[in-house]
Structure formats: structure tokens, C-alpha cells
Amino acid sequence: MTHTISPQERAQKSADAMWADDRASQHLGFSIERVGPGEAVLAWTIDEHHANGHGICHGGFIFALADSAFAFACNSHNAVTVAQHNSITYVAPGRVGDRLIAEAREISRTGRSGITDVTVRREDRTVLAHFRGHSRTIGGQLFEESEAGREGGRTNT
Image 1 (tube, rainbow, N blue to C red):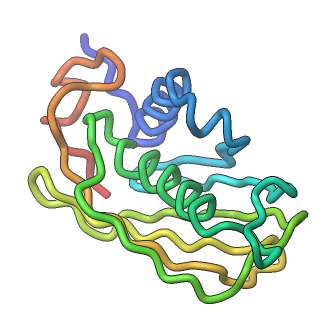
Image 2: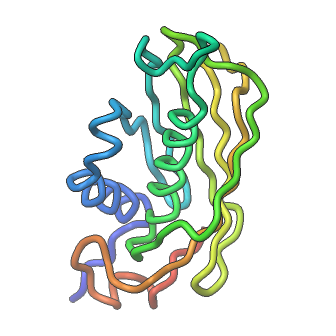
């Protein structure tokens, strides 16, 4: 009898497998707060060396946080998925000492293509940025799982 894992278990195992090799997110000090099917929440605190010439957080670091949350969300189905196109709109600055929360939510997944929205906020819920990521599934799994255990290769979200 084949054991079918739940979508939540699949998302957690996928995140664990990705995190083990995600040197960039680890080096930047990001932390995974939670994951679920098509969802991920990452957090990070802005340090002095993240500030630009205006004394605010360099946008590239905020983009990196949003991009990592996007990656964990769109890989939560145990299908290797990469970014195809991403964009970000900054609406407020981040400051040294701010703890940022990036909340990613998959809004569309059809065939090999997906769209995931990420909102980056400070802990006080002030929105700093809106990010939209377009993903492409390229084949392969993050961890070994039988096709029978993958509900025919699709997770209902």
C-alpha cells in the first residue's frame, strides 16, 4: 500500500530539501516562518550593511527576500520550479533594524507555468513592496516521491 502524503507534508518536505542547499538565503540571514501548498512566509532583519547611500535598505535585498519567498511557494508541490520573470514595486522604505516579512501566495498554476504574488511588510504590517513572480516547472523533484503519492502529479490548491 502506497502512503500518500498530504499537501502540507509535501510543502514542508520540499522546503526542507530546498533550504538544505539554499546558500544564498542562508547567507543573507533569511528564515522560513512557514510554508504550505503554494505559500511561503520568510522573514529577515535589515542590518547596517544592507543600507544604501540614502540610509535606507537597498532594494536588491528586499527583492532577494521576496524572490526567496516566491521560490519556496512555487516549489511547494515537489516539482522543480524556477523563475521565468519577476517584477517588484517599492512603496515604502525599509530602515536598519526593521524586521521584514515576505508573504508569498500562488495565484495561478497551469501546466508548467505559475504566477505568485509576494507582499513584503514590516512587522507593524506596513507594506514595503509588491512582487509578482512568474515561474516555470522544469522537471524533477526536490525529494524522492512516487507518482502515486503525488496524486497524479497535481496538488489541489
